[in-house]
Image (cartoon, rainbow, N blue to C red; front, side, top):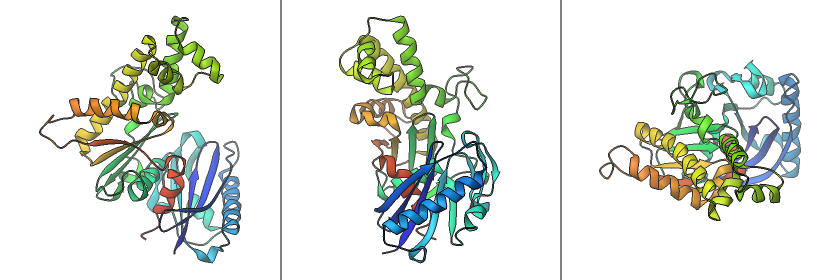
Length: 317
């Protein structure tokens, strides 16, 4: 068996895993991300993490074929540079060159959503497809596009940002500077915002009791209330699903993939959520009953998609 290391860089932590060529994680761990420090600190900590997980797997660096790294933001993969990652405060960071100071091996870097898409394509819910799209609904809306088995990332890795297509002209302001972006309406953040607004206007809603039982208002609040028949929550979820589905249909009409995989925290609502998106997609995708239908599924690698996807980057090079 060949072994690879997959590294998943996030705003709060860096996760890494030793991955076999069958997609199985042999060992894994994490370390904190310090966004207020120079990027070299994170790279040094990441290398130490790699040493740790290799030791736990009873392997050495010589046993590893290559290292794949997934990171948020615009990634110029060919140059090994993070062009821009606002949440990490990265601007033209030569991450691959910095990592190679510690470990002179084959290293490839790619956008984290693209990595997750590749992982799902190779070992998860997209396995067996030719073209697939991965959507993650979390703090924002991330997306990864796989066409003919390869990541589509556009010029210098700046493409594939589906979360920033406008679905409502002159709508809510997005952190990217535009108004009405899909992310502003379809993210978990958006659902929580709308839930809080609705609860403030309707103190009688069941959502108050549910939020109190969990100690906070989350994306789960309105979903649980809707499942229990709360009319306000039902209306809220219908609108949210409509926003999510509208963006999915846009992507389907452009790419017509075999499958669209939904990940991120909101996907934990499972088939209840997926079925609603599928119903909307079946009704509104271009061509109706004539054009081939696209299957909507929940992503299956869940929290390991980033690690497995990053490792997948370097499995066939």
